Image 1 (cartoon, helix red, strand yellow):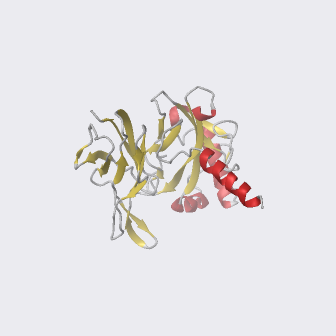
Image 2 (cartoon, rainbow, N blue to C red):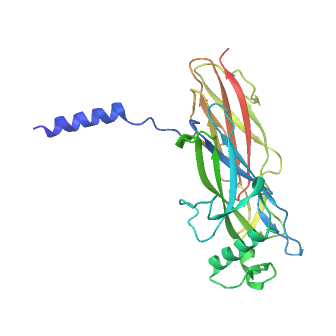
Image 3 (tube, rainbow, N blue to C red):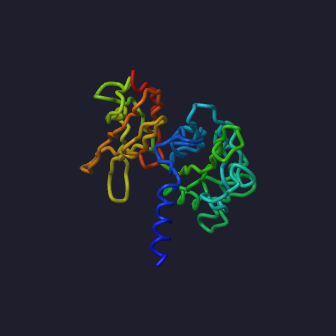
Length: 295
């Protein structure tokens, strides 16, 4: 019978010629590892009559060789799939100059009206004159939060598929007197000392992130007060390998281990390590370390 022979041959071809899959922690092309909003959310003070301050978006956009990356942003229309081919930035969004989202911008307010109406099926929220933040229906929606989507495009200018990345970043507009804050990455430790290198060749080393005091905030929910459980994503250039892409802080009795292990290369090289901290509520920060491996 030829079928087993053909099957074995096919399996051999697949095993020998299969694609060299990119690990989540690897940097082989233009990648946006995180986007930080400052402040972390659009928070309307329920006891004030003023608009929240503008939000500035800052992308951690990287390449394998450190070449510069340009990132543009736009507030996306609510009638397009934010996770599809949205054309945002582009025809389906309001361009955000220098990555700044300001609710005083008339074009942004017009899009907010559309977002509110899409979320509620209501015809309220305002008119061509601007978004009515005092509309009772609007106030009710803002108590739980109105999700908005900011599209981005990161490019190194090469015009190649590997030289561009497009995606979206969600941010919430809500009414609160206690807005969420970004966590603060204070340090990255190796052997309980600040990571400066050089790292040993062909060895497994352990890295530990350090948050600034107060980074894990307490917040109110329908089930009572909870504390943020910050989690980390680890990335690195070079020929070594991050063994644990994700790690997690323990909190409120929940288990966690914030450390990761990294297998260094067999030959000397200089690597860049990125660790991104997220608080699960839109808050983001990161740390970057460039170190030598080997003498």
